[in-house]
Amino acid sequence: MAKTIALIGAGRVGQTLGRALRRRGYRIGAVVTRRLSTARAAVRFIGGGQARAGVDATVGDAHIVLITTPDRQVAAAARALGRLKMSWRGRVALQASGALSSRELAPLKKHGAAVGSLHPLYPFPRPLRIFPRGVVFGVEGDRRARRQALALVRALGGQAMEIRSTEKALYHAAAALVAGHLLTLADLGTRALVRAGVRKARARRALVPLAQATLACYARWGGRAWTGPLERGDVDTVRRHLAGLRRLPPQYLETYQTLARAALSLYRARSSKGTKRLRRLLER
Ligand SMILES: NC(=O)c1ccc[n+]([C@@H]2O[C@H](COP(=O)([O-])OP(=O)(O)OC[C@H]3O[C@@H](n4cnc5c(N)ncnc54)[C@H](OP(=O)(O)O)[C@@H]3O)[C@@H](O)[C@H]2O)c1
Image (cartoon, rainbow, N blue to C red):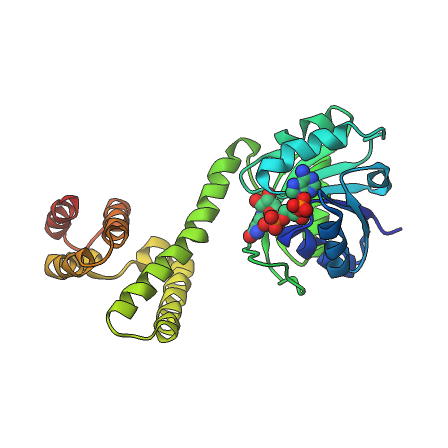
């Protein structure tokens, strides 16, 4: 028999996972948000489920309860679920936050649920109709919750990556560095190119392949893929970069200097003399 999943919170992640899991044979039960209108819209997108404003007895149909509210609402949602008159024995409660651990679900664990977290390492600026293959999910929690999470990941054609429950904040900081911050970096580069006379769409089309090629090299060689004037110890070029960036709002220079200092501390450059001079230049 198909397992039933209740969704608590049904925005970008809840709708995407709900729709994908329904298409892979899971039954969608309660779809709960705070407003009936958003729950109904989510049910339409998912193609199944019962829209509810606030948790109620319909959650009791579910084998798996998946909380996909914003992080700041996860604990409140767990408390509301814990107040329901239902048995949690044999059920699994999972939440999709990157930074929060299964500890947020203590009110449900207390009632006998297995608890865990299942975080897709993937950006969802809007709900996705087609779930991409190969998405990595950070997974932690009780043994039974982890086993259930792995089954969901398999059904979604993804890959599970187990992480320490105590290090979720660090795990999520890593994800934010290479997702949100990478986007900011690409956008700063695009805006700088626009100042150099390139149209915005053209600038993006020029820089994205450069970023992709760099990441492809990084995937193969790690930090040994490092190239550029810092790696070559080319002080004059870096001085020219700094002069150019000084003419832009301060965040351009600050970002460049911070990342350049990080690179010099992480990687081995070609010339130690050049590195010393670069460190001095970047401290000014
Ligand atoms: N977006 C991403 O790229 C992404 C990626 C990976 C993981 N995540 C994680 O996934 C979770 C959800 O993020 P999201 O981007 O999908 O958020 P979202 O688009 O803002 O959706 C949040 C949903 O939760 C509902 N909600 C809010 N408070 C609630 C409560 N107390 N009880 C029940 N429903 C409630 C909202 O509807 P109402 O306002 O009508 O209640 C809405 O349906 C977060 O933990 C986030 O960290 C997000």
